[in-house]
Image (cartoon, rainbow, N blue to C red; front, side, top):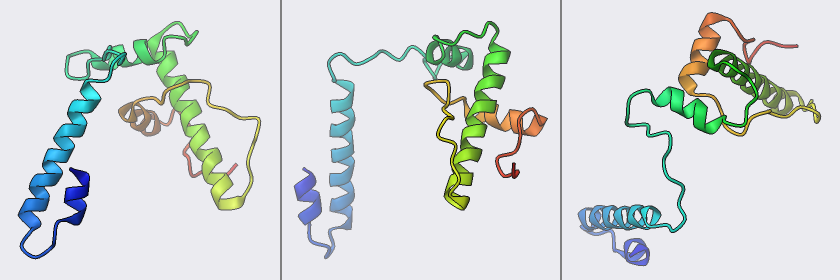
Length: 127
């Protein structure tokens, strides 16, 4: 199907290309859904209280007791990592000892809330 899409002539074939691309995307989505051994979606983003489940599932190995501390710490460390990366790409200076202590990133809404509340340093502040 992809080869057909790539070799379809341009003259008057825009609608045909769109249809083929749509078919290709549907086939790929079905193949992804049919993967054996696929992990179930334990967060269930489409249901209520998904944010709480996100942190409970994705940060289950974290040793912090309460969710607010976990969210604040993950946001602080994540933004610290962004600052270190920015410093590396802009100035060539990098701290090789630093590593993000969690496997997953905090939610973007929590990062934004932390920055707005001033709980974590801005990623553009110099050291």
